[in-house]
Amino acid sequence: MTDLYSQYASGMQFTAGTIVGSTLGTSGMNPIVDRLNKVTGSELYWSCPGTNFVPSVPSATYFSYDSQTGKATAKSGGEVGVAPVFLPQNAVIKTVVCYGSAGTTDETWTFSRATISGNSETVIASAAFNTEDTTMGTGSVVDNDAYTYFLSTTNLTANDDIYSARIGYIIE
Image 1 (tube, rainbow, N blue to C red):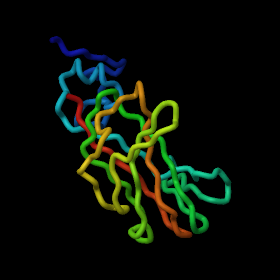
Image 2 (image 1 turned 90 degrees about the vertical axis):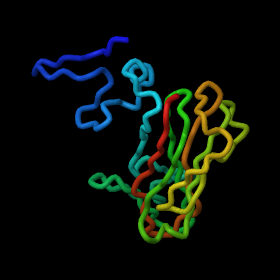
Image 3 (image 1 turned 45 degrees about the vertical axis):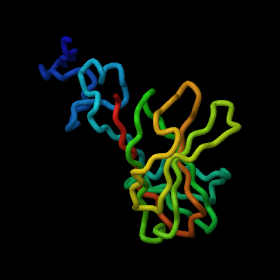
């Protein structure tokens, strides 16, 4: 199969799907282009900053967001953060981790899927903050036709920071 390329006005030529600065040369966002460029089997990553987490009960008083570092900070105790996750169809999830400040080490995160109709949730992975889970449960193969995917936290304490989250996956 012939590789697809894109040439820029500068004369630079990249394989289709390349993000400038990417060490893998794949976007991880377009599985069709990535498959055409033969990246199946390579571990890819999806990540998000803490600012993707919003309070489960929306209120301007629950979280503050840092535009320079991308972290979210719980402003008072008992806050639960939720972040949407967007992965390519048929991705096989291998690892999940959420990073946070020292105060979050006694808190946990959960990676789940819910049916499109929203009436059923399945936990795929869960661990303490700053701990990577490599033991995926039911639902570790992404099915965007039937499910939505999201991360959530347990009740955070005031001044707990959510720095980021990362999911490792492969496309078979």
